[in-house]
Image (tube, rainbow, N blue to C red; front, side):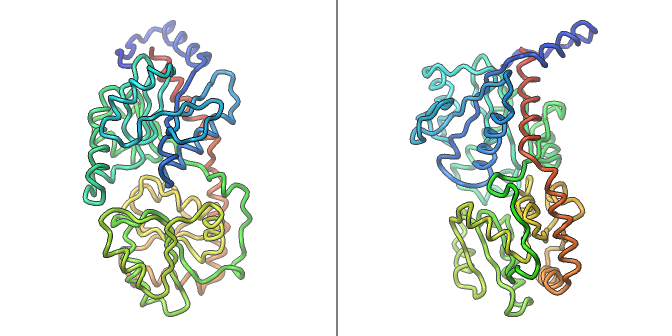
Length: 376
């Protein structure tokens, strides 16, 4: 949808627009191909959002999931041969959708860059702008993909971000009207829904770092903090290797008191979160910080750098530490030794996390779809 937006301000036109937004039946296509190729935050976002949209059971919403060719064939899905992050995707995907007869009212690209799908509204989710801040952390192919955002900006009708921090940066970097960006925070993932909080006495003396092993996560800060921690506290890292990180990977494998889980499933992650002394996020910046939310859902205290959007997620219930190894060690030791503080943060974190719901995210995203479709 690339037509000019209506500029009339008459009362009758406004009433007509509101009526249409409230009553329009929508067919939405959500791109879930990435979920078939990799795990991680974006794949989980796509899966959780689509499931939550369908749990709305709205008679005004039909969701078609676009999956990779190797995905199982199920009702309400279309399998596509065009792979995600392909350099020809912006041209190939609209053609394949047309050939397969997929003509939605709204197309939702969940991975930054949207193809130019004809005769429908286009929504894109931008999770962060790390590709602008730290391009050296990405493969050349990945960097080429993300840089196409400047091209897709011309035909993207609305943007979704998980945080105000990301929304502000997106608006400034690409000269996008803030009114076209909607902040929709993530929710607690299904694998942690209703999880039982483990008491302090049952916790183990390890701290958990979650996420792809890459420089912007600043895992070196944690490795450098280990000598200050004594022999009782260990570091568990849960995340796949990134790109061009051979030296960091060698340190993770060869440092004592470090356990690296490269491909933990949801069941293992649930237990890692539940029994950790704390979850540590020394990241340079996060567009949202899903591990912080997942930790809080388990009543696990968070020690954070406060970078990027992390304060939006943790509120006042995390320990924020400067990027100094001794300071990080001191914060971790404090949590280990101060039972009252640990319990206070555990209770407050668990309560704070409950406001982040995928049902709420689905409702707010549905409102974006309606607004985009109403412009046609």
